[in-house]
Image 1 (spheres, rainbow over the protein chains, first blue to last red):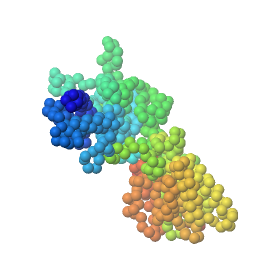
Image 2 (image 1 turned 135 degrees about the horizontal axis):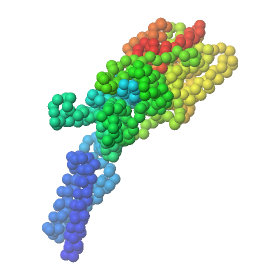
Image 3 (image 1 turned 30 degrees about the vertical axis):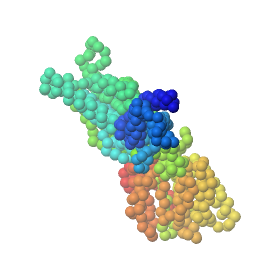
Image 4 (image 1 turned 45 degrees about the vertical axis):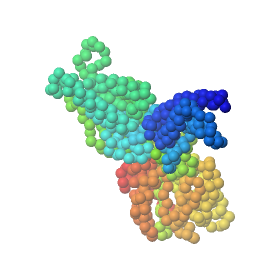
Length: 354
Length: 231
């Protein structure tokens, strides 16, 4: 009896000392999984197991040989229960099988939380999206075109969404892709501009050194690439248009602003060109733009060319609308964005009738 | 919460239904993400459809013809997979012409609808086809049968189908009344399809209508820049 009770008490101690780390692991897992300790199923289990483990740890100090003639000694019963609970908790933690004391069960809640958590750990899918943006350089500057539709999946939900914005007097930004990310980028650039203005040497607007288009383009490249590295991109294809210093350092003509047109995509790829298109435009509009583009296009010609391409996109892109905006950046007038207007479409070709 | 979980759950084929998610297709397959509609009136039927055939988000055909004739006075509006519905209507046309010869009279719309329903139901695992069978016959006059995915067949006072139909149930419920004349029915079909085209990305182009009466069939279309309601 004496020897067996000695062994039993050591066994208890062993089990308890095993149990506590397991419990800690269980708590850590449920904390990691749910972000709080307030998850009902795990929390109850944790508390219950913790309580029993403590009792099981304490028991060896007060162990007495059985006196009461019970089939099983109280301490043995407690140790058995605590071991069972520890094993059960381990099982739960390992198998993620949610046995819930809360009404309605918890399986859907846990998997939903796991789904939500998983979604914040990796890249999402875009919900409200804009389609193509087109841009060309012409004689007086740069011109952009975009339609005013934001789709909610396949539904044409927001028909007056503005996808072209003015960043400053030298820069236009257009975006396709997730509209909320575009709004967030616009806010970010506005905040930066305000900070620059407030910390500038002079408070006179004309003395503040505004970021030129190339600077904005480069800054956005850094922003997008950074988010891509976190596997959580801003889901946009951005077109930056405006005037900027040419790229060369110590260039003789460095004082002269040149028209700038560049693209930044959702993973931070950048390039600049005389014709730019995102989304479906890169398949359907780029060939037309390359064919018809000249550096000395007049404003009317440039606009007609962009309207032609937007018409084709309306014919062939499910997510396009025939209501568009045109925006231009020129040295003389700065940034001008037109009000939305409808473009003409043709449906009366003879082959269509039958 | 449960809605969020179910977004990731596998959807059954039937559930993919009139939501007509164009991405549910096999690669390269054409879809008719669509709006189709038919309303019977006293003496005939008006059938209408949009004209957009899309693969994913590319519009493969912007002036497609989704109302197919299968007999003199029986037409079928097609939605779902273009390939499946074209094959089905070819079969139906063949069998109906045989039947007309064997029985010596024009087949009824009910027969055509039953035949279509048999084909869709018995091949339901391999087909994605939702159709509206409409026409005129001496027995029932103008009648319309709606046969969605899975092969249910329902005779209806009016029928809507395709992905764009979700946007116009309210409008049609509001505007429809029993015993409309031909012009009222045609106006409602055109208006409703225009509204659906305005909101559904998978519907668009022109509105094609066919008016079927005892005397003949009138095929018309409204071009995309003259719709009763803007795109």
